[in-house]
Length: 122
Image 1: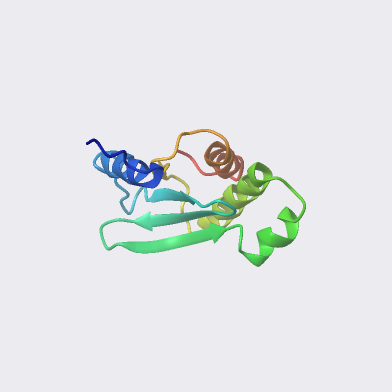
Image 2: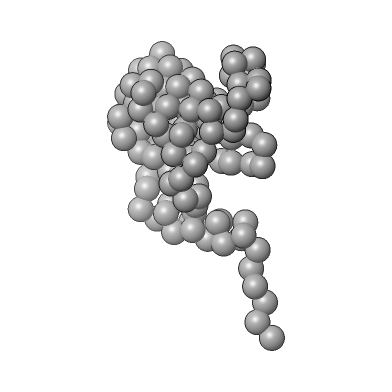
């Protein structure tokens, strides 16, 4: 009997397939997105020493206050703008976008557009 994989397992397989092609280096670190049911998280990672350089999420106090009463897509855009601001403070201007196996649609797209609006190039 065939057993159907759950959606998260399929997403993880897509993410691994993407990771074979997308690699963050010191010159262009990787902007990683993780989406849960009620929050969205983003971090900029340098893969060679495996260090997180910058992180932001809807749980950050800066975003939480502004996102109160807004939809998840609008909150995602705020997270994108916040991570772009923090990256610029750290001297990062160019990144590689890793959508984490999610479709480039909805909240993931809003986060990417917010990061571009904040000045990140990818």
